[in-house]
Image (tube, rainbow, N blue to C red; front, side, top):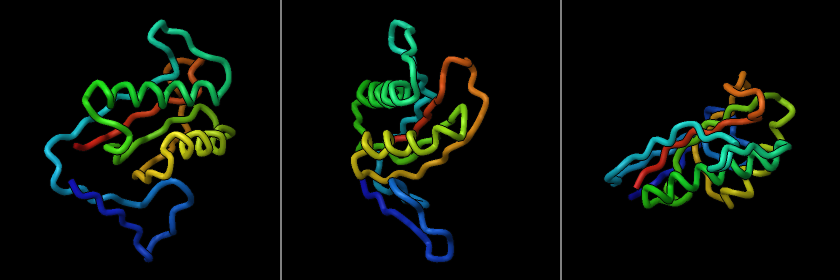
Length: 127
């Protein structure tokens, strides 16, 4: 599998932790991960954005693992935030979790299904 990061000079350069586009060739399968929420297997939702963000990323990783993949297979993710004030903490946790991996990404400020959830993350991985 080959992943080529694309950042056109004709568009605004990305900030940290992502690229404008990814071209993936030579892969044999694609995994679409439904929106993961900040709830554990027992349904408990932690207090505070950082704890919810870490748990949500843990849920994304759990789905990848169940498919025999890791964060190295992640090529795109979309994060829905309940409020703009979570933009910077979201970026900090994301960059920590991804550890230098650059994916295509979108961040959307949206009404989240459950008011207790401060974010939701969906993803695409290839292998």
